Amino acid sequence: MFTISVSLDENGIPRVSVDQSEAEPIRRPEKKKSMISFPDDFIVIDVETTGLDVRFCEIIEISAIRYRAGSETEVFHSLVKPSEPIDEFITSLTGITNEMLESAPDISSVISDFYNFVGSETLVGYNVNFDINFLYDNLMMYKSLPLANNFIDVMRISKRLLPDLENHKLLTVAKHFKTSAPSHRSLDDCRACFECFQRLRDEAIRQFGSVDAFLSAFPARKHNLSAKDITATTTNFDESNPLYGKNVCFTGALEKMIRRDAMQLVVNLGGVCSDNVNKHTNYLVIGNNDFCASIKDGKSNKQKKAEALILKGSDLEILSESAFYDMVLDQ
Image (cartoon, rainbow, N blue to C red):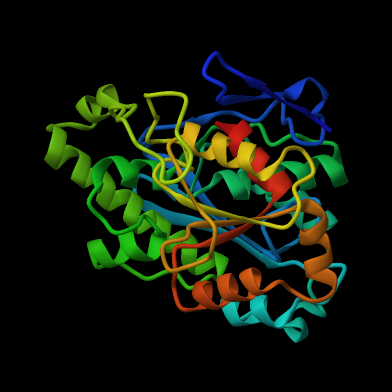
């Protein structure tokens, strides 16, 4: 699928590189890069899924809300019937049940309706890369159409303007601004994202004097960061990278590299690695084979602990190995 090579530098420290030349299932050639902007007209999007890897997981809800000059003008929303029943974890997280999905349309029709609704407009979302990837891949899979819209990740903006928050989950930012709370239902989360987006625009003006001054100051300043267990081979880190400052735990056998080299990749992006899942963990990366097995049969203790922490509100997400590399390659 793609080639990852590891070489040693003169100090014997591994340097990891990823060759995308064979990565057709992961590369999205017409996908745009995340932009930083505060347009007047845009569409806020959100999807709910059965997990974070498009190879194994499915969309179960899609919402999109059109905004014109700060006002909601049109709404698109649909549940999506998956090919397999959803598990108790997803129901506990989202409130979506298998009974609710029984009569829902399948992804082929919903993704087409979504595509027609959004047209070529700018899309806005929270941690929106995952939403874009799922929508892009499903559009290609069922309609042979790329999702080539410009898009804005509100989480990136929140990290720049609110660096002192304990984390930058949508719920945390919403609580900070005392706006509507997200609920892990896509329509509610679209509206929560919109409110935070508007408040962040006001915050940008407050801190920088104008939106233009804020935009000219992006990307954020780079900082040095020492990794906990593995020493980084670079001294500059980009705060906009999703792994910057995040605590990552691995479990299961990785297919593309040994775990130490995967950890090296994390710390070279400004992250921190740990051996166990705890309240500080932001991402649990599960080996591809283990991820596939875990969604069909039993789950590892690390995954069970991660799911329990997520349901309690921890800033933690579960990634397959493939989704982990996808995240790295998207930036």
